[in-house]
Length: 88
Image (cartoon, rainbow, N blue to C red; front, side):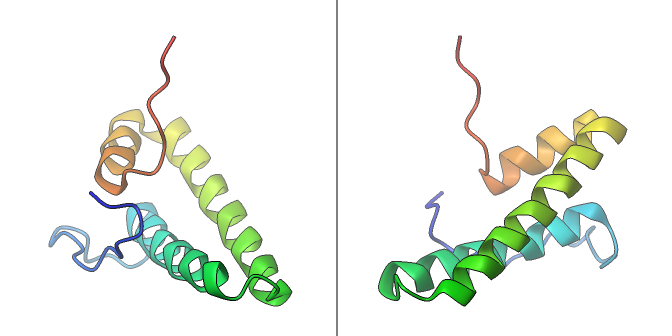
């Protein structure tokens, strides 16, 4: 999957807009959209600030999900292709 591609298809079981997975999907879409915007407009500092805020929110949600349900967390990470697998 290409990292810059927007995630347009949300699985049918994710109809609950308050679920952690849906929120992370949403934040990931916003992050990818803002990242592509900032590649063109490098000095758009307000968008940079917004991107940092969204990154922090997504990071907190992912930390919460990893504590509560590790299986759902790993499935979501694989689905979104967010984090690189740790290699030792």
